[in-house]
Image 1: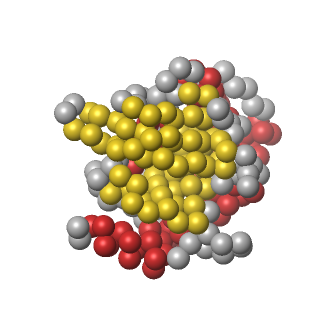
Image 2: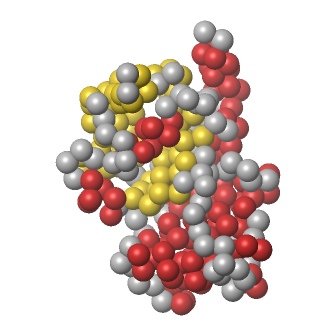
Length: 240
């Protein structure tokens, strides 16, 4: 079993007078892709934002590489890159300019050759890299955002609905990128409502319903998690 990188331990989160997460527990190993599935309002994004320290646990613990998000959030953020559903890049700048600017904000310096390598890694065509992002499709902008995360070279990547609004070709490309990151040792934690997409790329899947973990699924050796099994459990829980 791979070294554990992310841990949620009986995690509870209250927002106002409502409990959003109730005793949620899971772990993610180094180099694994873990997908947290659930419908709208299930608590998926709350779990992800808890690992970033933007939402504080009411009870329980969350750890990144053994670091408590309650007590050592600065160190946790140094080890994580976050890709939100709505990527905030500057559309009047080119891909290269966006990467140079946002890397500088994090105190990271990369050479022009390293930036091009990051864009190679996400298969962004060389002839568009100096064009303004206002001319890009959503899938192309997503590639730039992923390149930014790669170039930060953090051991953990957190993704919020990463394939929302992407066409099937862009989703396949995105899943291929995640597979490469996983093989390179990057730990990926993504939240999504896309059952079939998650089953294509994740080694483990957690299913949330009304803030509770109602299912955990794991791929067999060299195989994929059964989308039918996950969807059946999801549908049964939705009908309750």
